[in-house]
Image (cartoon, rainbow, N blue to C red; front, top):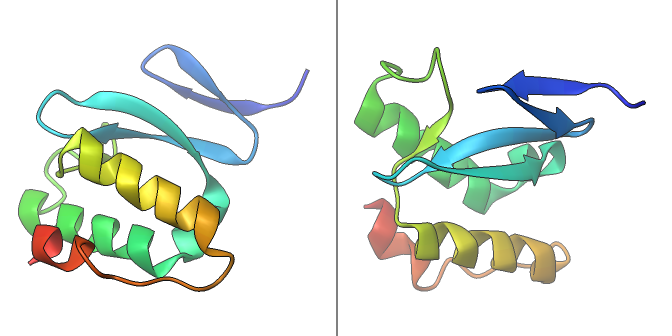
Amino acid sequence: MGGGHVSGGKKTPTGTFAVYVGEERVRRVVPTSYLKHPLFRMLLDKSHDELHCLQQKVMLVIPCSLSVFQDVVNAIESCHGNFDFGDFVEEFL
């Protein structure tokens, strides 16, 4: 059995971590490789700026809509190292 992180009683596979998206705190599991991607870094920066790390000790919360989060994930998975900030910029400003 592979190791993983336990978050909220749910185990995440090795090489992934859980984030909680939007006001509803929908749990999503993403690869740790996302931490290096500029679009995902923008989500983390927004989280830090808006939440001031108050909730981050318990869970990593991404304060954007679930649809924007999914758009970012889709862009990361399909960009192959090339990305366009395009429509995402307004969500982060």
